[in-house]
Image (tube, rainbow, N blue to C red; front, side, top):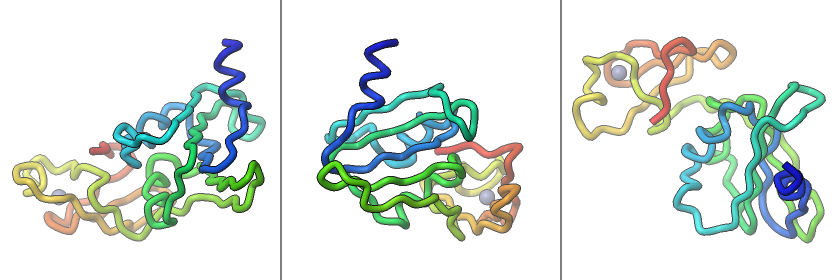
Length: 152
Ligand SMILES: [Zn+2]
């Protein structure tokens, strides 16, 4: 436990911190951002105490910076996440992620008959409702929502 705490509080010189991730979404966020293949130093923690949310997760990435279009992809899985950009140990930017207007290659279509579940086609959805997540499939026009959402 002590070790983990030290990892969490340790500052990074340059890089990105993704804070206030729902604890159970940390691995999802790592997956959405393809961090499994990332060669930068990655630190993460789950079930950390948060004043705002009770429990939270955090990811720290050394020397890695994201475009806002890329980082907003995580908002589907982690709408509460905050992105913090650090340069020379200073926070130079802090912002809330925003749920994008479309989701490409992130979510599976829940419709078993959808072509995206049978052929090598990248899933594509229009985000109809950002609050109660409703995603309209570009191919079968069925709606995938919070109750049946699965990430790729
Ligand atoms: Zn579909």
